[in-house]
Length: 485
Ligand SMILES: Cc1ncc(COP(=O)(O)O)c(C=O)c1O
Image (cartoon, rainbow, N blue to C red; front, side, top):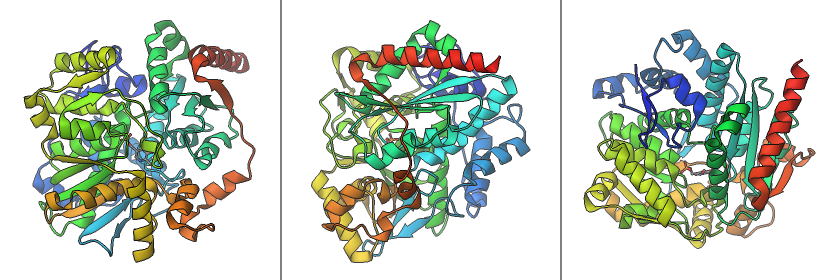
């Protein structure tokens, strides 16, 4: 049975169920499986034509032991998770006409129209399954830069064993993203708009980890999280790399390049683990906007704390790529002591310089680029005008990076991840296209529906967030206890 340990080395190994229900490890680190499954070429060949859900079943079965759940239980959790996706294929791929052998992987056909639905749909079902079995309840707390929050709120809404506290930096996400969270009327969903966050979503993550560190509060509230710090999200996100790969290659074994708009490094981490497991990915392209912390890690070998820029691809306005630490575990000899030292140094000094050997190990098979807002706008317009296809700003950041790095990528096929639907960013689409009326492709019925609903939200200044949350969450718990008697 696979054990899960903290990438910072503290505490004991735990089983899969504990890793999923805890979110963070006991020492504040991220859970990692002590080893990854290896997938042979023969195995990959057998999987080539599987549907998304059948493929998910095969891959998840490598991580989820039959003693944890039966085959029938896993199959039913997967099929329920993806039943509400708009496309039968779950993740269609669009072949670009204006580029040679380049595909857009459309990860936005879930109910809240971003790639976060893909990991969240399954993870929330999984948490619900474990909680029902244990007859337990959890308070889930998530921070969002605009897309995790809607996905978490959507899938948790109405679940009798979970409350969701969804923190977002007020004014730093689009109105459309905000409405996706605040128009849900379910009593177990609590959106919290936080004003004056100097570093956007990173600030909110820091408050969550402080709440986790408050052992009495964590125990009382039964605190957990479904942010990408939760291993379940990363595990699930490995599947779309396999699926996209199978859809574009002529024969299994052919190597592809994959471009990913990146912030917290969760999605790239999942792709990198898929590659370590055996998926033939030649180059992972880490695409940043002006918040270029990952670009600095992969091109210059250091991570530094700097001020945040508000960009048009706001969901990746992130400067602390928490899942990079998780990925490092697998590339740096599983040396948890080293990882702990790097994390502590970053927290105390705001700067980590990786030694040459470490840099060579982790950057092998990666290229990175940081695109400007101007690049993003230009590319949205170019692709729309040349082939009537509408990219969202994040998909555009990914394609802009692949375009920029073209000469270093070689002739392999390119898969570019489109992580959100353009309807979440109407003001930017109008700006890019220089028009007032959005084209049909830039709208979505879910977004239109949310415009006509009342909003329900808490608001709080960042300065008081921690104490305000403790108070609000404890009051809600008391209310739940009263109602259950
Ligand atoms: C639309 C979109 N694209 C890309 C990302 C980056 O994903 P990750 O944080 O896993 O790097 C996010 C979220 O952070 C997102 O919402």
